[in-house]
Length: 381
Ligand code: HEM
Image (cartoon, rainbow, N blue to C red; front, side):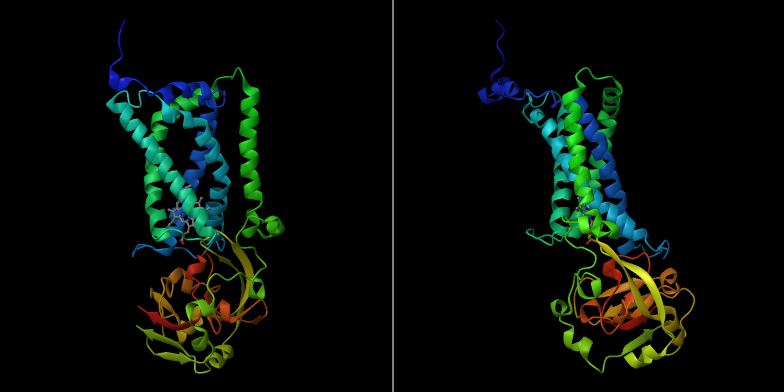
């Protein structure tokens, strides 16, 4: 009789496990279909996530266009709503493949060890991205790290592991889904259930960005129509400590830096300049967005008073004393755009304090965190 070496003898628990994984759905075909759907979701989240990152942190030489007006609204809506909709697919996929966790021997060769390690990286990075993403949009931060930085770097790990996984398994998955299955009924129901769960999540969150579906948006953390003047607020004046400064009648807007003339304007001065209306969305990094009617002075008109022209770059500064988003950069495509306003009114009323009274930036195709509120200085460089 041939004896197995002691080191390769599976523990008793493992030898009994295969008998427990009796479902036919732990098979390659189910795993392949779910893998294809998840691969598409993750790559679309990666692409739209990069748009969000590079809109907020453009390299020095790059400038984003100000049109199409709704570009960021769409990309970040797809990112968050698509990401949420992919959660049921991820859970179904993990359920399908988890029996492989107990395969014996755990490692057959160096190549097999590397392959397994990559799958662990892939699953770990995916779980991290989905879990932190969902916690972030729920405004719950049980972790100590800064979400955006961790989410950004994990995205590269996830995308890299996914590309290698597709190179390794893609041909097999394609062959599997192309062959006619013998036992399709149970699997079809399972896949349809996962797809229906995914569709339900999409339908009950899409209204946070697509206003006609707002009434269905029961799973969305923010809904259009809520908040002062019908527009949601993420950061209030009280939370940022600007209430007294923003209400001060001595408030002035200063244009300084590389200017022909330094300009200082009161709120009355701003109201005396030509007023314009623009219908533009506030499109939050957390995926919600809502269109509103903004009225105020064109940024380019104020800059012209200071003699600004050409390729100047503007730093818009808020009354906030600290915080990552107290300033934002406005490049020529945006400040020259006639839709870019220093808004004084919102939906027919003077700006509410929480929306940036006395004056805020509103521009097309720009994340909400860059639509600086409580503006008091424009620095030209
Ligand atoms: C599926 C895999 C995912 C990938 C590859 C991915 C990738 C990215 C990337 C590269 C960014 C830009 C980060 C930056 O600005 O530096 C980002 C931003 C963001 N993602 Fe994801 N993401 C994924 C899933 C999710 C999910 C499921 C959610 C929530 C449901 C989510 C919510 C967010 C949010 C809220 C931001 C904006 C962060 C900010 O700028 O404050 N992501 N994502």
